[in-house]
Image 1: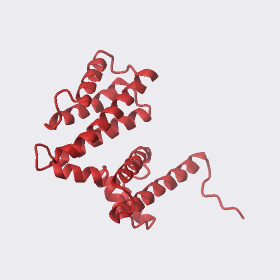
Image 2 (image 1 turned 90 degrees about the vertical axis):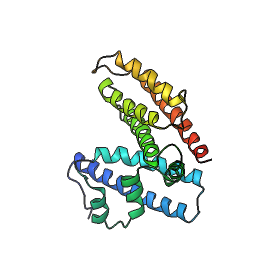
Image 3 (image 1 turned 45 degrees about the vertical axis):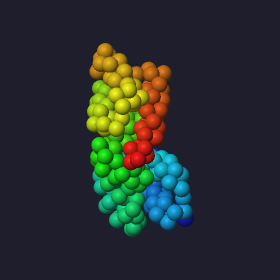
Image 4 (image 1 turned 120 degrees about the horizontal axis):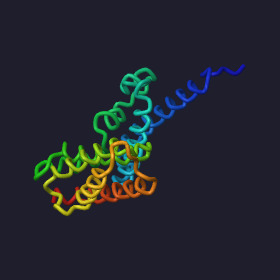
Length: 209
């Protein structure tokens, strides 16, 4: 006899999302343990961890009304994934980024500002993937990102991310709040964000030298 977990399409989608959230948390836990035990290289870890964090942020935003507390979700399903919960909920950035940020804390910038920049980059790129392309949705995110980048004195004034965000903010300020980016504009903005993020990450290791 077949037992159905859902009664309609909405319930089915809910359970599928729960299953995906469960899988992301479990995968992050395994990744964290693999990194701690040196079973994966830092670069491989960072790439995979960043993907999981982005997927988690996207899914948790969708499920915010159904799953307002991730820790409680993990407890309900007896997941025992404390490392994953810390990485996804508390930290929000890969351990490798935290380590580089800590090394920078003794210089001219703080770990918290580096983490803030990473979060703002991820949130901005993620919002475009969710098709949040109205000016009043995009502008605040880019403004926060630009402000956080300005806090890091190790970044030169002509740093790619600073220049790109300044250009986009100027462009958006000339548009109406309800105006939306075209598909081509959204694609270009995502490209600029990704390029700037990669440049930002590449700049971190040298800060501790």
